[in-house]
Amino acid sequence: MTPSAYRLDGRLLAALARGGGGAETVRMLRESEYSRRLLLLRAMLDRAGEHGGDTWRGMNRLFGVLTDAWRTAPDVTRRILGHPSVGPRLVTTWRTLDGSGPAAVDPLPLASVAAAAATATGLDVSIGLAAVPPGVVLPGVGAVRLPEAAPGAALLLRGGRTGGVLETGTGLRVDLPPASALGAERTGWWPLRGATWGPEASFLVDDVDQVVVSDAERPYRLPEDELRVWRSTAAGAMRLLRARHTDYAAELDAGLRTLTPLPLAEGSAARRSGSTAEMFGGVTLSRPLHARDLAETLVHEMQHSKLAAVMHLVDLLAEPGAAEPRARYYAPWRDDPRPLYGLLHGTYAFLSVARFWSREAAFVSDPAERHRAQVRCARWREAASETKEAMLADRSGLTGTGRRFVATMGKALAELRTVPLPESAVREARRQADLHRARWSERNRAGRTEN
Image (cartoon, rainbow, N blue to C red):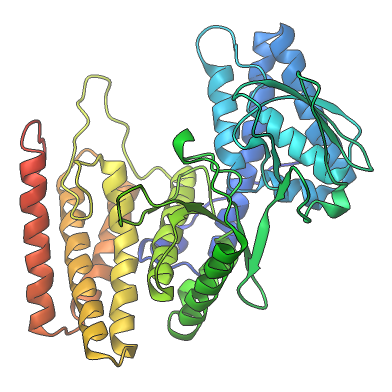
């Protein structure tokens, strides 16, 4: 498990700033994120050594399990360490060890990662875990369902070549499949389920490991009939992207790894999607209604993953001084004031969303659907142009590299704004923008600091 060094030269950074980069660049960013996780593991081990005592012994043992798993099956272990939901667990473990005072969390979040690697490689080990709905999550592998186990209850996983056993403090035992059969569902065991979308790529529906959503939303295991809808919609989205947006399709093939379904909030028809900086290639979203809407969402969220990885390699934002208030900005796609980090992410994503709808408008034959695509193109290319200007106007928020990055985004937006659109679509987009700003101003009248 040796990390590699990565750098972005000016040419590649400019291509990324324009919203592109291509499949090879996305693969490089994915590899850089993997190396970052290996460095984080090494840093955790060093920090645990500074704590000493039980913290050091526990962390050293978990690191040893991962090392043994790597020696036994390096490809399997690499896949698990690269799984999107492992990232937040590593960061949480680091923050626990790096906090002031002793690291009191036991077991550390890294324990579930080590347990996943041990189970998937058939190691003969024992690892202490804590119950998390739906029972115990082994990231990148699956989950043991323990509906009666209280959250936080102590559990013990015993692994072996012929399968593992999970023991609770109440005497309950759940048998786990051997490593060769982890993909098959059985009583008490929920594996991750795949959905192939093309000859070269597939994704996992990770509906057992909703590590970034609230406890109220867990678990949300998709029934088979709903899983079929997700698979069908995703296949349709990728067919559309392959036919009309080959660059975005190639980047998704190279980078997207998991979709985590979210239930719709009770009484709401609003659909949500999101991604986080530590979950490269992972998207959390409500079930989309149509393949085209899912295609837009996948393009949008892949841009967030790309930019997060870029910002792990290159400083785009200047660090504010200790006494400097953090500015907040108007974002035409949000109801709340956003920090510069969020504004940059949104601008970058909506550059590609506007480009997506510009291309769609050229393909759609139905007049109403074509108008809808043209309105969305006009709405988001103007919104991203507006926030680009706000970022460049802040003389202290961006580094020199960050200003060049945003300026290059601006050039791509300027090109997109030359694409002719019907006046009716432009008027409707402007009406929506004005309505959003009015509502935002009313909602945020008190305490607004920018725009």
